[in-house]
Image (cartoon, rainbow, N blue to C red; front, side, top):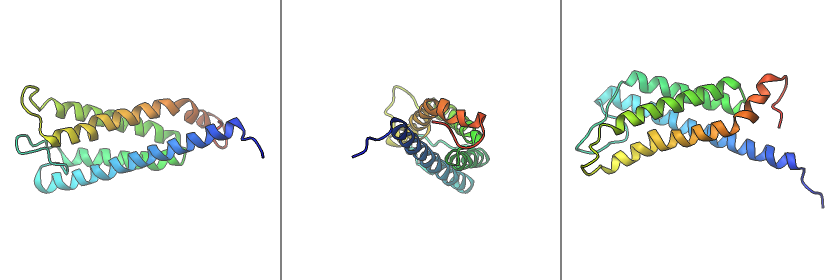
Length: 152
């Protein structure tokens, strides 16, 4: 029986985390495209907030950030440094947008269930992805400085 090399387990966990981040960015990009489509057709987002408050926005911005998310997902999985930068930028943009949308809800009144879904999509999700991106930054961007594959 052979003992696994310590670097192999670390590399495997980094690869798994990278694929997870790519999947999360891909999902948010697809949701952004759905937002763009429904905003262009009806003026409301794909995820309904509730009868009391309708959060809209521009389909152009929804499409732009969806495209950035999709590009970041592909480039991140392909281990391109620009993918990390695009992913961090998209997460920051979604955080700003989500915090802006959260201000539309009155803190005293009952918050509709759709608002909690939007909070998860536009604040909690991007915050988690951004935290994970920051945690892999040294490992991920180290490979961008040198030739060949990423060093572990």
